[in-house]
Image (cartoon, rainbow, N blue to C red):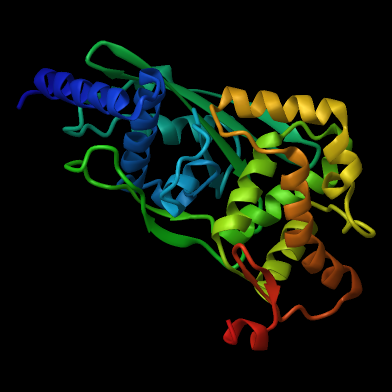
Length: 308
């Protein structure tokens, strides 16, 4: 099949998928473009320079509907200089494959971003062409973060079964929890990142965690980002935060934007307080925390866990 026919075939199959799943076609196109860009990264000489992080990991970890994402997040190693990052992504865009999409090296543009007080990075934008459709891709690259207990080798799920899967290194769930908790603590009432609350809620509901390892990840992230551990329960996990009118408005807007089922912010915050306050307490006291978080059941000692 020539390139033109392949592109038309891929676009038609993606349109069918959008109709079958009742998802926005533009979101499907963007998700496909991100997947194929990640595959090109995975087979390029730059593969060892980046780790996958962010919302795309939830497609890998959970077979449940998650909030749609329109960009990819990576942790970069080496130089954070904008020209260096642009060169890497232009190289990645030159990789030609029989997957219907052609990324445009000349469209690559990078600029510095600052998401939070202790976090900066580089935002890369570029364009992929798929049978006349222009797929706008955004990749946010952070630098310098701690990854505990270490990167995981993953095969990223593909949208079309005959396409090769990206083989990547990715964040462990422990570091995802630690980074989102650090943002929750450092931002306090100014936190409008409702997606972090939702992501933490999903992780706590569907994942078991080793308490000692979670404490290690939290400590490493807070230390790297120079964020002091909170005294007591952080404001972002308090009833006062959950009952704040502005926060409730932001939460409802987040649910509507992402077409998510109704879920009360107060329920989410209470659940996260049960999940995160105990390892935080242990870190504050310099104590060991040999507990296991059992998804849906809370923290258990080894004896309680074996008896279930």
